[in-house]
Image (cartoon, rainbow over all chains, first blue to last red):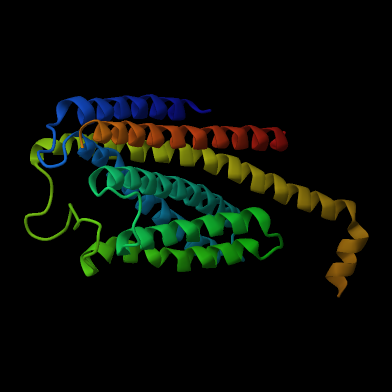
Length: 243
Length: 39
């Protein structure tokens, strides 16, 4: 692992430790919910991470589709980053669902309800799990193109998730940030939000960068082996080219 | 809420850290496999 990755990891762990300390021991306790409200400081970064990494996945899928026949080197990089970001997004989304469920159980008395925000988020998670399963188990030369197209359609659910608490008033509370006038949290609680937001996004970037490198290496090796196989079977290559 | 709230808070933090660590382990395995295959 390169030096900058180690440095990034050390800084990230420091930010996460500070975020943990501020969230649990520094910011005041919520007057309505008590200490369970502190789940918020891990819940919100999970959604931010999900939004960031699914957006990266969308961008990479678009780049892959645009350059796949013209610039193979860039296409492999874009596709590798698409895989890494989709996995990271799925992890953040899953954590958001789990922490939300635990919070809901403590505050609402239920683990789950089929309200607009929860349902649209679960559908989003399932779409990206399906995307990863497609990449893992389907075979054939067109699989990357198919996955990229699926990623673009899958991303259509992201704005729906974001707007769900604005369009429909169901069980999930109204948006805390960017909601109606007067929404938001007390400024004295914001340090816990900022530290954890920074820490978990830095963590996501670190892990996704590792995953990107391994996926890129795997795709490059696969490509080199395919080219080698063509070299070892010149007759077949000629026949295929002669048709 | 009381104790129940505390328990859910601890579970939420533990789940977040735990899931990230499990995924990190998966990524580390992928890293090693890809490195070995590339040699």
